[in-house]
Image (cartoon, rainbow, N blue to C red; front, side):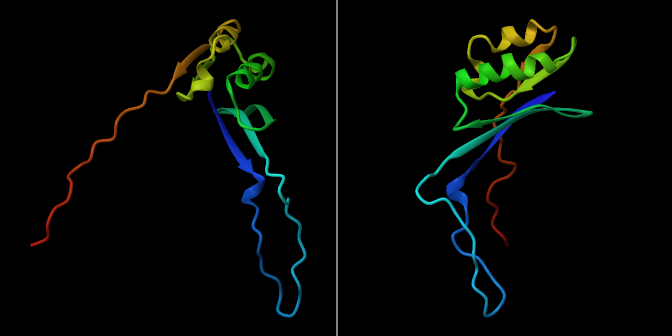
Length: 123
């Protein structure tokens, strides 16, 4: 299964919009209270598991708490958990919590992207 996170910020709210001609657009947007919400979940071939939302950006302590309290109880023996190389995924306790459930942990390898040709002049 793959574990990943995404986020949303309230300051990404559009401050302008469209309304029918002659009508005023009435909507609300947070003013000066910018917040970040982070969504984490695991993706298996049969669906989404262990979803969680955190207020603020994810850090090592929050990610370890997610693994111990939300993800680990949903793991099955033999599961393979794949994470990207985010520093908060590598804190002490994450691997131990996953392996205690009989699952294994892998990190994605990052390969450098090589250019395949370069600039060529047209003749």
